[in-house]
Amino acid sequence: MTQFVATIAWKRGAQPFADNRYSRAHAWRFDGGLTVPASSSPHSVPLPMSDPGALDPEEALVAAVSSCHMLFFLSIAAQRGLIVDSYCDQAVGLMDRNGEGKMAITRITLAPAIVFGGERAPAAAELDAIHHSAHQKCYIANSIKAEVLIKGVP
Image (tube, rainbow, N blue to C red; front, side, top):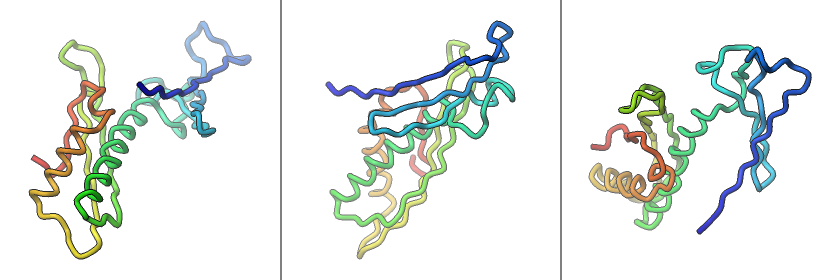
């Protein structure tokens, strides 16, 4: 078993609280020393209580799924002797009501643009197989209920 730790810190300071108009800005601190400014999404909590320049949990979830998929994709490609020169994904999460009627990220669509170098690029079937394998191995995708789609992969 492996543990992953994040410290989430928020302080009220001098702002009112009971009126529900307090700032949602806070910080995420990770064990490697990185601190990330975070906030509620302006889609969930209107300005000025949200900070649109900070990372929100919904974006973080979408990024985590995309990053996990990419890391497994790169590993599998390397094992197959492929050379990946670049991988860029513009992942999109869809917030909607789930089957229980609750608001949730119900779908995450990955749209990776991958450039291969070296002497060989994978055929479409091999590329699809790598994506399927990466998805099956992705810890984050295995941890969520949302459907994860990869554009161009059946």
